[in-house]
Image (cartoon, rainbow, N blue to C red; front, side):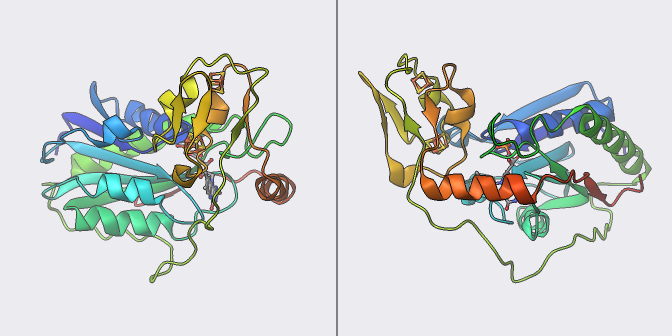
Amino acid sequence: MKVKQVKLIYFSPTGTTQKVLESIAKGTTVKDVEHINLTLPEGARQTIPPFSDELVIIGAPVYGGRLPVDAINRFKQLKASKTLAIIIVVYGNREYEDSLLELKNLAIELGFNPVAGGAFIGEHSFATEDVPIANGRPDSMDVQKAMDFGSKIRDKVTALQSSDAQIDLEIPGRFPYEGGVRAMTVSPVTKEDTCTVCGTCASVCPTAAISINDSVTTKIELCIRCSACVKNCPTGARVWEDSMMKKITNWLNENCSTRKEPQVFGIDM
Ligand SMILES: Cc1cc2nc3c(=O)[nH]c(=O)nc-3n(C[C@H](O)[C@H](O)[C@H](O)COP(=O)(O)O)c2cc1C
Ligand code: SF4
Ligand code: SF4
């Protein structure tokens, strides 16, 4: 089968999942690459036509060893009929547990035919310059691995007779899935002395939790702790001050600093 078009579908608040998907697509050398970015509320509301014979790369970050609920809700509107799919999760150098298996099963439920999968590493959402956790990842080595993976995917798909070929993709994980994010009603706060009320934080929030008037207001109950507002604030005015969040971040920094490497499934590397 010749791959004529690649479609990237993702939920990626801090952009690491998007970067991994783009690198895999680059490795396929297919010129026609379309982005279906479901991160922001307006992206999530777009009408997506059913998929057919394109190659889809679908990706999400790992939250508590599982897929983020907002990613699942957005992906549930997708419809495919045996469209070949690459399933990708990106995690912050702790673990990805059952998330990739969850994505595989969801993809099949939506009508996709998963041909390969991967768990890549991205800078942890909670990481800062002072308390690093996988900072700067995916880095050049990760990008190279993603591109090599993309190149091998192209070879695998080219060798298939049709998109409904029987593919037994083995993915590690437990079913029923375990884990999930711990319930916490917290959000980053805004330091008024350095906030310029530029509105960037509101424009990157996937749940529309932030509104801007004379100052920044956050609906805490909508916050999913993705940290997009913190990482995108141009003046460093948006920060985590919650003591439990600081404790978790310090724990991750102390216990998850040994570099993990991407793992791929369905492809020999
Ligand atoms: C609420 C929450 C839970 C997370 N849970 C995990 C986890 O269980 N394991 C892990 O290694 N990283 C975890 N992370 C980190 C993200 O998976 C990681 O930073 C990822 O690269 C973010 O993807 P994005 O840049 O596409 O948003 C979590 C992040 C958030 C916000
Ligand atoms: S992005 Fe930062 S500076 Fe801009 S409004 Fe938000 S908190 Fe203020
Ligand atoms: S307010 Fe919460 S959900 Fe919105 S961008 Fe910030 S961390 Fe993410």
